[in-house]
Amino acid sequence: MSRDTIFAQATAPGRAGISVVRISGPKSYDTLTRITGRDAKPRYAHVRSIVDPVTNDMLDEAVVLYFPGPASFTGEDVVELQVHGSRAVVDSVLKLLGTLDGLRMAEAGEFTRQALTNQRIDLAQTEGLGDLLSAETKMQQQQALNLMGGRLSKKCEEWHSIILNNLSMITASIDFSDEELPDNILEEFSTKLRDLVRDMEAALSGHQTAERLRNGFQVAIVGEPNIGKSTLLNFLAGRDVALTSEIAGTTRDVIEVSVDLDGIPITFLDTAGIRDTEDVIEGLGIERALTKADQADLRVVLVDPTSERKPGGVTIRSDDIILHAKSDISNRGDSNSVSGLTGDGVDHLLSQVKFIFADRLSNIGLTAHERQRSLIIECMSHLHNVIAMVDHNFEEVELVAEELRASMIALDEVVGKFNIESVLGVIFSSFCLGK
Image (cartoon, rainbow, N blue to C red; front, side, top):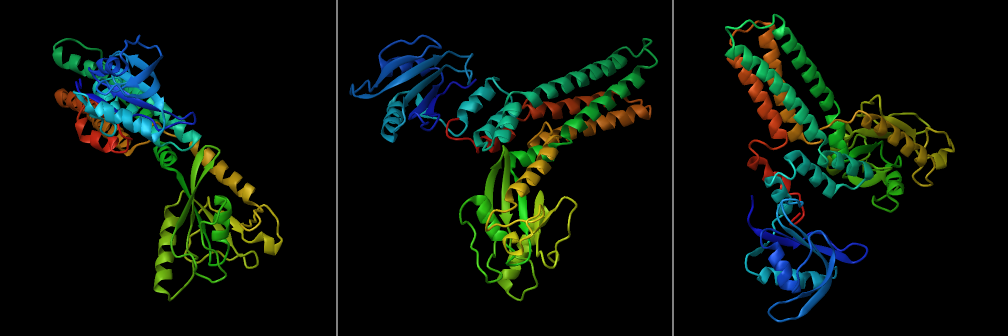
């Protein structure tokens, strides 16, 4: 258990102009009484003056709360100071805390690290909290809350229990090898493990979708030069983010615009016009455009309404949205046309994009981080080894038991029960100061 007392600005000023300064550790309550001159009842909100105990200068009038450990977020004694959110007030309060003996400024993610160390949350929940801090859309928020709320952790606990029961069965066969055991014990054992592996595979089947939701889906706008890609991107952005010109080859690099499409995070990519060119710089832009188009989760391919010609170098995929460009000039006005100049067809385009990704999200997985996925795959690998051993009447039962233990270790690492220090630095580096 951490015995340092740390402090930091836990939240930036909100709409009401309030900022929270958090203190966590054994000296939290003493610090509270020292800078307010009064006691505080646990879990009650009190209005107190924040005063420098040396100079008697009043810094602010704040709402203060005291949460005794271990029943607090960090598992330590915690004090929260809800101060007015001006820079001057926050700076003066933080400066005061920094002068007090036994207190130090928290490092990035240290409050959450205390909670993890004190077993208030596990590692998977910690990753969920990190996702929540960076969530920009409703669906990202919900996915992060599911992870932070223990959805994956509870599933891992369920799997762990099943493996443990099977390990107990194998251990019994070792310890009581001279006793008469049921004839169908190995058959029952193999069936349970196969069902477990199928359950894990189902949980991982939507991992890529969950990971893309966390990072945002990418939609590349592809087409020949001067087909209207940049104009369409500008309309989607609601501002001029891409340079438009009648001169072919204006776009040389990939330009990105992020959109919240009813909770689905989408990044639209404007790519260089695809054509044969002798211009070295334009050629590099086209090469990058083709790479981005191949990597994108979805592509909007703009074609000339008069020729129906697809851009050369692009292999059309079954889920590509192919639209006639510049409907304001061609006057086609059908559902397969779009104009970035007038916005004609854009609503229909967004509806198509939303439908496609909503369908993919219907099969979203439990894991949203590669670390989680790889450990569950490692667990499954050990279980496959056990199933193969049993199916081939492998006589070294001790090795079967060891494979089961290895599978449990891999599974436990998902929630941080083993080798936790090796991954903490990477996880907490993305947290805000103190959080």
